[in-house]
Length: 317
Image 1 (cartoon, rainbow, N blue to C red):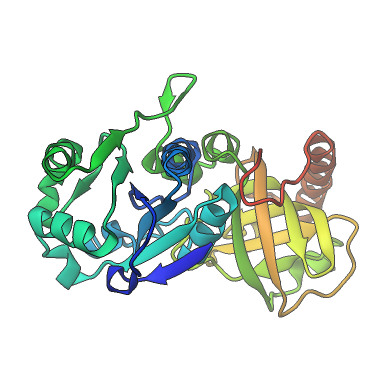
Image 2 (cartoon, rainbow, N blue to C red):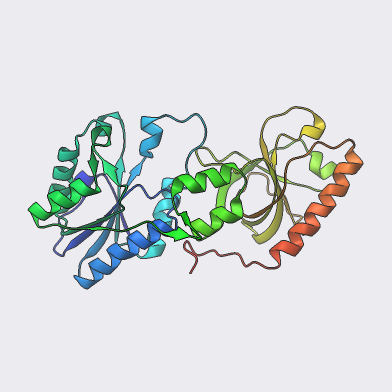
C-alpha cells in the first residue's frame, strides 16, 4: 500500500479513484464495512481505492482532551488499512489552519487534488469549518459534478452501533472483551519496558513494567488476561493496571507478568492484547493475601487464554 502525506502530494491517476472518507480511528468493524465497499467499487471500475484519514485526530485539535483519546496511532491505522487491501492511504495533517477550511473549499480541494470518481462515507460524516458540511451536502454536490457518493449505514452488533466513541467508553470502563467484538480484534497497546521497583519479583511474580502508551487509551484499572508479543515470541500474560493501593498511593502503572517467561525484557518494546478483565483493582490487608490472589489471577488467566488464539494479522478474518 502506498502512503501519501498531504493531499498536495497526491499524484495524478490514470484510473478511476474511489475515496473512502473518515478519520477511521480504530479501524473497527463499521469502518471495515465502509472501506470494503470502497474497495468493491474500485475493483468493479478497474480503479484504485484511496482512504483519506487525519493526523492528529480532529478531536485532539478541536477539543484538546486532557485524557488519552486514540484507539490507534497513525502508524497502527496505516498498518490496519494495508491489511484490508487499500491501495493508497492519504494522511492529511489536521491543524488550526486546516480546521478553518470551509466545507465548500474542502470539497473543491478534494475534487481538484484526487480527481475522484466516487466517494464513500458514513451518514454521520462531517467536514469543513464548524462541521457545516455533511454526507447530504456531499451527495448533493457530487450529483452536480458527476461524482457518485455512496453512504454506508452503520454496523450494529446485538443492537449496539459500532462506533469509535462506544469503543472508547468500553475501554475506559474495562470492557475489553466487548470492545474486541466491535473492533474485530483484541485491543492492544505497545510500549517500552521500563525499570520498576522490583516489587513483583520480590513476591515471586516478576513483571514487565510498560511505559504508558501516550495518546492511546489505557483500559480501566484492574487485572486482565492478555497475550503479549515480545522479541522472544508470543506469551500469555496477567496484566495489572493501577496504582498498587496495597502499598500506598502511587502513580498509574501497567505491569505484565508473562507466564512461563524468564527473559529480562528491560528496554524492549512489547505489545499487550487484552482478552478479558478478571477483576477490579483491590487493596489487600496483607502481602500474603495479595500473593494468594495473584496465584488465583494467574490460574484464571491460564484457563481463559486456553480458549483463545492470538491473531497477529492486522485484521482478524
